[in-house]
Amino acid sequence: MKIKSYITGPIQVNTYLVYDQETGKGFIVDPGGYEKKITDDARKESLDIMYIILTHGHGDHIGGVKQFKADFPNAKVVAYEGEKEMLQNAYINCSSELFGRPVTVDADIYVKDNDTLEIGNMTLNFIFTPGHTKGGMCIYTDGHLFSGDTIFRFSIGRTDFYGGNYKILINSIKDRLYVFPDDTVVLPGHMGKTTIGEEKRGNPFV
Image 1: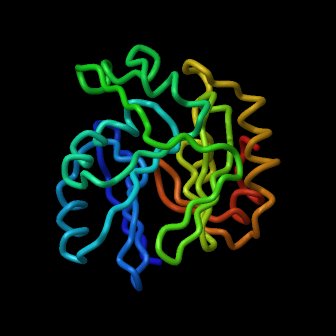
Image 2: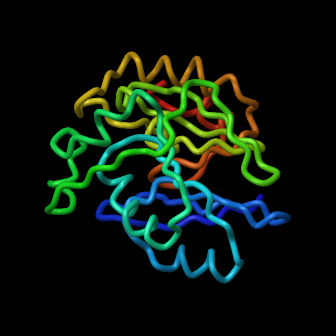
């Protein structure tokens, strides 16, 4: 598995290009804005981008979906079933404030907690982690956790937006994420990467 990270969108979201080097099949996580280098890198490696996966529906994580769908027309958008309201309502996903225009997305596939998805030799596991939004999720595969805005390096996602709840978010982190091995690499939606062990030892919010 190969993972490349890019900064996209108006408030610097970590967007990830992930692919199986053996089969060339891959996916994009949280395209906060359109970054042509992602497309260029995917084409340079002759990748088959099968999915665009959204950890949650805030505007800063969905702003590039439309353009990447144009670049990769066969790619299907994946989101958690409880996030449909956020994805489809520009008022509550804050996209107008971020982009100066409304941005909405309708996923092709809405997953449930513990659903899995096969992409080449990779198996993705979707983990329901509400608290930052009602339908936020994380993605686990091969020792790596794409955490969106659930947890950051020694920080957590905000809970003062629509659908946010501090207590629920902390429980999501403790009950759903801290059960992974300490050496699990956490790839968040903002800031640098970390590990589950580091966060268990030093995250002051949890």
